[in-house]
Amino acid sequence: MLFLTTLLLAATAVQAHYTFPRLVVNSKAEEKDWSVTRVTKNKDSKQGIENPTVADIRCYQSGNAANVMTVPAGATIHYISTQQVNHPGPTQYYIAKVPSGASVTSWDGSGAVWAKISTTMPKVDANKQLTWPAQNEYKTANATIPKATPDGDYLLRVEHIALHMASQANKAQFYLACSQIKVTGGGSGTPGPLVAFPGAYKSTDPGILVNLNTIASAPDSYKPPGPAVWSG
Image 1 (cartoon, rainbow, N blue to C red):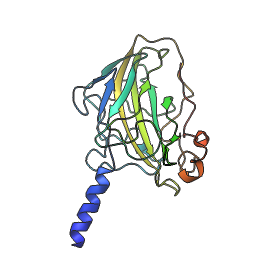
Image 2: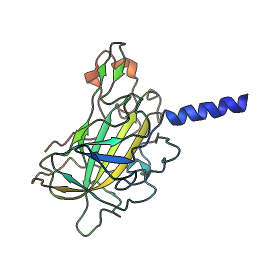
Image 3: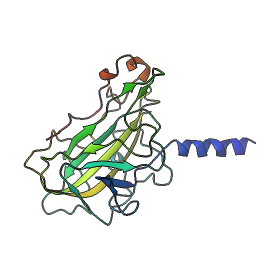
């Protein structure tokens, strides 16, 4: 009986976690899972990262993807999730322009190269609980590639930060992925401020170490981690 209970608990834990294997651009998804999105180390386990200062916080990848997806500037994007994104917490998107002479299919995204282009904020539902956009859906929240984004190859990074246990240090859970994209029809903006992963977050950041009960009465007081959003 104990063995059966352990198996059931393990299965429940996996079902509560998720990965983001497929990018959707203007309602069109990449052809198959992990085609332009780099396979993440939690592909099978579905476990999130709890320490935001480790190298895996960048893309959590176990390998590069074979393909590149064309994304028009101004496009609406989201990711398909393998399970419901059922934990409370923000969804954030970052882009990093591939340096001249490097390839989007092999560049690792190291250094202060990442600009945040979107984040989500909570609301309070009828049960006085904090909820975020796309919570309990099989997708991440929508975002827009700023129209001023210069043409070129980029890594696109999505993350969902699950905050249900975030009142304890290193108990927030990061679910993330990076995709290889080519932005077209863009502008002459300068994405920024730029940050590095790891380096952008600390375990003690107020948007990472947070008791949701204390901000339920003032959801606007929640401060997502990382730099300001660049909207172009």
